[in-house]
Image (cartoon, rainbow, N blue to C red; front, top):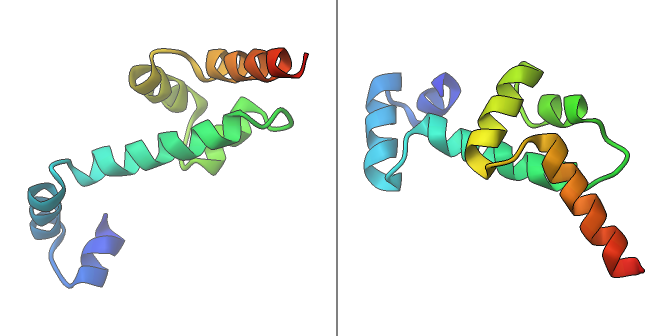
Length: 93
């Protein structure tokens, strides 16, 4: 958020207030939403591990990723990956 505020030419606090005013969500919530969406795209790939997905999606730890993903999607990243794998398998055959 510091970098975004600098790019916009505002203090971090003013930028955060304006961001929330115009987007109806905090910068943190927006960023988390984007990270989870990116993780979802990566989780459907069979050759990438959950840890790699977490790191490539901007999470600093696997436990944080698991907790936030479960809160957002009502399932763990592993469950999401398995559900998508099974769905693809059923479509094929």
